[in-house]
Image (cartoon, rainbow, N blue to C red):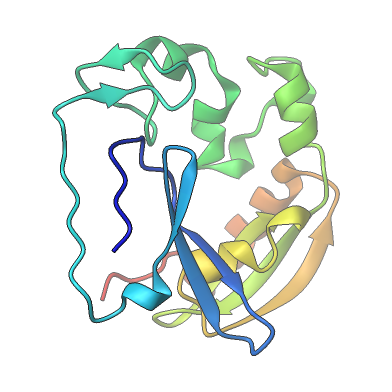
Length: 172
């Protein structure tokens, strides 16, 4: 059994192997724990009553925007509302909190896609996140239908398509 003394939990990583099967890893601290070999086995996680910001590592009483302390949540572009609503991306207006981050994450090719998750849905992802985003959503199938040059455009196309096709993954 693998024992990790402690470390920060990060987002689950899912990748496809050469057989097309998804293999999962759980990042804890500097290690990645392979989860597929643990299917059907007992796994114990212990919370040590300490929350740390995933950006600056500051100790905080609660986390915001998926793991940030309040000051980081207020200043970082990756915590801006346009991350959840790409159709509101404001990089081109010159109001991005971190223009270099916006350039590398928002001003790059994005795909609008259809995915078969708990039902058909429309979504967007950066070109670097295919097929990771689909795996994260539990899609059994996905099909890119538009390639656009930035996040704002992808959000506008997704919003238009969401009038006809859901843009939400239903909880099962």
